Image (cartoon, rainbow, N blue to C red; front, side):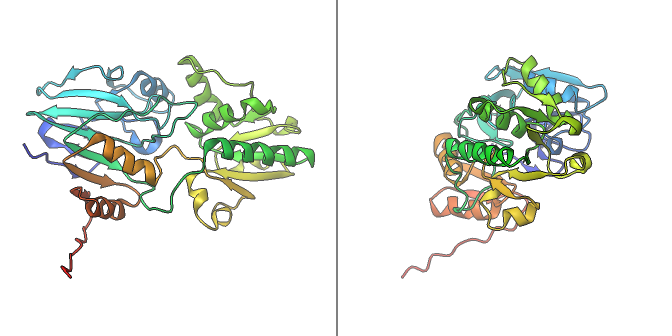
Length: 325
């Protein structure tokens, strides 16, 4: 069987009547994780318990849910067999494995192989066809060791506090804020978090995660605290003396501090970097790969050069010609 795959309202698999990470309402969608760019108000969703709990605070309205544990087998109404595997992106994030007419397909959603403190360890199940995100699909994107990044963040915070300045770590409310908070644990620094970050952290705690002490952000009492919260925004206007840092894999780009308008940038990502994208394909051993997001065309070309059939989904693919010299 040849899988039919379209990049339309997320990833659409018409043979099994299933969308993956659709944004506009559909009858049935797999939701890989609870970031806003992967969710929609669908009639019925397939997801993990962690994603379901996070969705409760992010996506209003009624919906039917099929909540699956990792590696639990479920059969769709059309007979297709599905399983969810940990993606390592944020807590509860999952990959979708589908088998239909004896051929298997794996959709990664957002994922990372590097172990983190606040997400399940990414799995690498075998599949015949692989649809993978390639956010950092160029060789220059190699994340530094997490321990080094954490040490640099702590040094940044201590230096600011020593000068009577409030250090602010810009981190998205779901996933990155919790990882940053966990990485600061050994430093024992007083922490305040933006209300949105607090809300997501409390869901993490309800799912069994533990964190160092933190308080909700209060500009009137911020002195002596490290602040964690989403980039930019009027919420920081009450903090006159502050030093800001963006926490993102895009910190690897030259000029990141100018792009984000901050004083420093730390390369910590919840996406796979270039070496891990290659390792992931090697582990899954697919017959065919489709790439989406980021440097999809470039990474597909890299895989073809390594002898793997690969295509950037929804894009023109420039085929390489051997010169036979």
